[in-house]
Length: 71
Image (cartoon, rainbow, N blue to C red; front, side, top):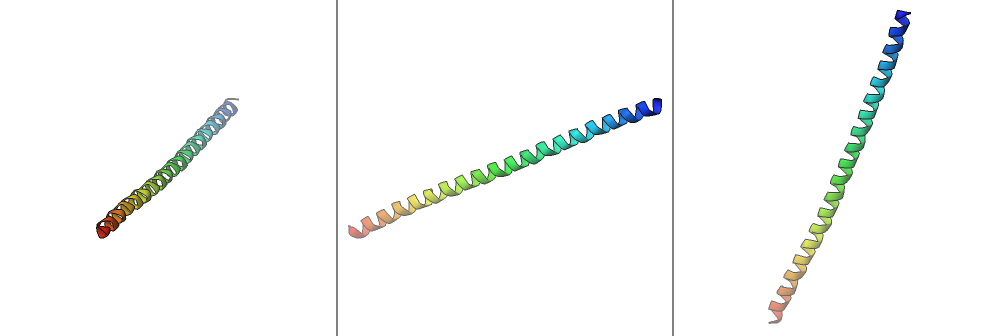
């Protein structure tokens, strides 16, 4: 009886242990994906912003360049 009791408890414990590890792994996996997504999102936004920033500066420079030549 005692041996079975211990085996059952051990089985239950192992089951919970495995479930906990699986949950923890899944949560980290999801967090990692979220972080990676967020980083790419931010990089994309930064690139887009930078591109616009550079285009604006280039346009401004070009406009001034043209104005100077015209004058």
